[in-house]
Image 1 (cartoon, rainbow, N blue to C red):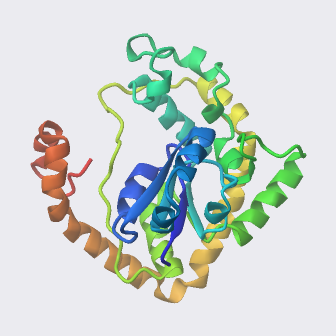
Image 2 (cartoon, rainbow, N blue to C red):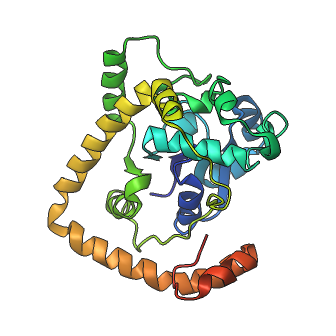
Length: 280
């Protein structure tokens, strides 16, 4: 495929995957920032000839953007266990990595309970909102059963391929097959959490997160069933392809070593002894 749209759901290893996509989709990229109206204004300011040269759309935006040439592109995405995704998002914000929240939730004063009660959009059913919602990232006004039926229809008909953060390698093998990539994708882990400053989640916090993400949990389970069915359809070659992919992935880490060193030399040196896979 010459052009692709990656629907980047926050905290689903999307930054790592975008870096991976750069291997296949060269030239101009357009990355949505999360502010759809500003993004659309920025997009329409690009000259027509340069817009035609965009090979990959990524970043944070709902599936339906209101830009016809984006909304009709082959679309791929990744899902993540909703509770783990929200936990990762809370960790991300607590480390000061969300600039627009830095003033209200500085790392030095981060309060997890207050944050979970904040009503911020990304804490609640964001995977379903981006998959099914309108340009305002709102879920359809329908009961849970109808929303789930709609999600299955969209996944079958409007998403070319999707994967799971928890099964990242298997997902890349499936994408390789579905998209007809001529070589194996390889990746380095980007935007990892600070393991020295991990948030502690109580049972009450987890109950709160699950309550905020009932739709996401249901959609995730439906998507996982479809994913497993897709894997079973290529079962005769899947294991051998997965072995080839893992071999290529391991070999590629020597290539990523200097890139990772330039990005985070101190952390890399701390981890280099006894580890070949050192990209973070």
